[in-house]
Amino acid sequence: MTEPTTTLTDYGLALLCAWYAWRLWSVATVTGQASVGYWAVGMAWLAAASLAGGTVHGFSTVLTRSIAQGLWKGTVYAVGLASFFWFAGTLRASVTAPVRSWLMILPWLQLAVFAWWMAARDEFLFVIYDYGSMNVAILMLQFHDWYRSRVRSAPWLIAAVCVSGLAAAVQASGLSLHSRFNHNDLYHVIQMGGMYLFYRGALVLTDR
Image (tube, rainbow, N blue to C red; front, side, top):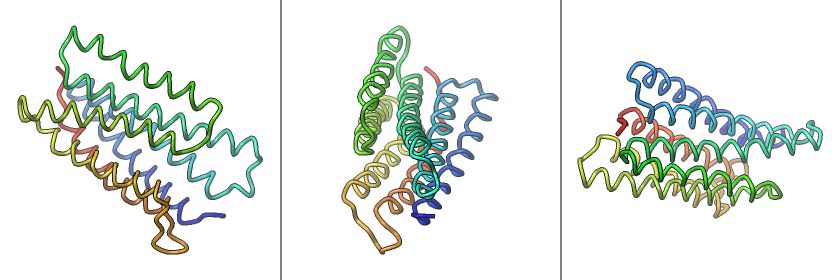
């Protein structure tokens, strides 16, 4: 295993997101809230991204080049899909029809541009940019909802965006706490806290 700590923290994040995806899907099935269902699917895609990314980090020396490249490309696109579903789910909870029908073009447009841009690129920094823009959209929508009607999801999702922003800043900075605990490992650990906050916020979303 070439990067054991990165692999283990990635796998830990994958298990956490998979559990949250299952819980959110269970709630969406019972309550019929489409917004919660969107977030469940987004969590599942992020779990898949973490699993694939951890495998690349940990077993690059035993994977063939084509398999490693395929897994990494899958990681990149899985994060993009998570962003899409979270953006769409938040719109479903924040905006009423018919305006929502027009605004739903935005997550589709973001996903299309991201897929086109990443087709010839592998840098994770662009994934952070895409994920960050989704977070900004969620932040704006939830601030508006909190100002308008004090929705229960807003404090959780606003806090989640802040924690995810911190995680992204740490990842981009290259900060390492130890030779065996680098910026990627720290990013995963901070993101675990962010995922808990996202989960709690998504649990109480209600469709508009």
